Length: 307
Length: 289
Image 1 (tube, each protein chain N blue to C red):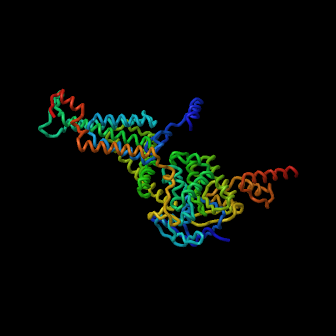
Image 2: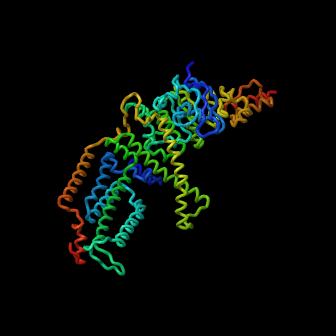
Image 3: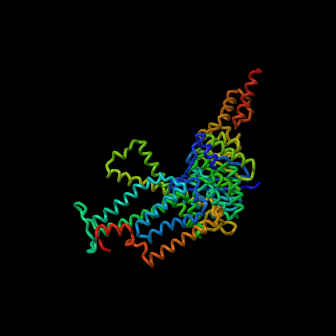
């Protein structure tokens, strides 16, 4: 739908879909990302997923997080939908900092700091802080990818990178089964709620037991589905050997719909260049080492902790 | 006369089951005809079409005796690819047939297996999408559309492969009345084109009978009755006793005959229109008396 017809529809009170449901979430109906070939988008995913591994300066990883958010905004991703990731972001933080405060390790070079009744050690806490932002930067890179790519895009990208058809098909079926598993889980829960089961009123231990009991129907459904998929593949002439009719080569119609254009080559080259430069300066000069963090330098200055 | 399917003394028992699902089935299906299959649940209808499509014995374990031939080739000796080029099967639950992420991928999967070139794939995709009216669904996920749309996608997947034999196992069982009508419209178009042997299992005899050249009753694993529709529905009590409901118009005219309101030689209707016409004639002759 063009912008004008879209706005007309809005004026007429018609709801226009802005997002398309996928098995793993939602992607925008239209996005500037779609102008890029799926393989470029997959490389971007790898880029944002791997580059934080070279960077141990939390400020830079925080900047990467902001870049991811800006790219999401540019890509018309519904940023409000990111709220669903808040629990995981806070849970990871709580877990990591609890562990490092309660079990900081035993190193005489650590600087103890008294925070009320508990003693914390500066070095492991700041290390955890840096690691946390690295993790969050990687997480948002992943969210960006799955918020702008459908399962189909992932498979096209993998096949463009010469992954054998059977392997990409297995990945596709796995993604599908993950989505179906969640759907089945929701259906079972709704069926129980419809029959009056109130999980909120249950004790935690009973809830755990209930979740364990869900596994029985879920696995039996999964087994039945596996059987059905096997029959469907047979009925459509798929052979395990990958033999194709007419003795020819298997064509890839969906992949043929996508073309690698100059913008893809520029984007891939730019990412490769940044990646190589980052890796080089880090390995050669340690530019992104934790010691170069401005926050680390400032805190050590304030607390009188030498490097 | 050439036969698309020839079944000789077929017996089949699923693994871990006590009884045979199919018992000494003998059947010949003429090429480019429409066979409607009816029967109560658990009497062997799906097993019969699974044997024709090759799922039995290739995908199930059990005891298999006898022979099923498709255009003279023995099904047991054919592999998945050979069978798919000859027989297309639309499952009762369309979702169980889907293996891809978009409707478009779903449609081209079989064509890629069959080794078609890209331009042929495009042509067949467009043709199948047009005939089943799913052009606007191609970009969607097959799990994110309505039941009727899913069923049409499942039919399009088989049509795109254009096998000479198309089997549909209860294609309207999970959809609304409008969706059912669309499916029967597709079947009508296919029958009129006359290029396929159509085998359709369906409980909706009102819609099935007018399209079928032959009706077949499967009862307790046997081919209990096979005849052209008018002849098939002559004994409503017999069919009812075997779990098959006759078309209401047929049943009504049978009652008119029994009550001597219409002459005994009046042919039985199989469509509502025919039933109305016979009733009008009966009323007219009554007024003239």
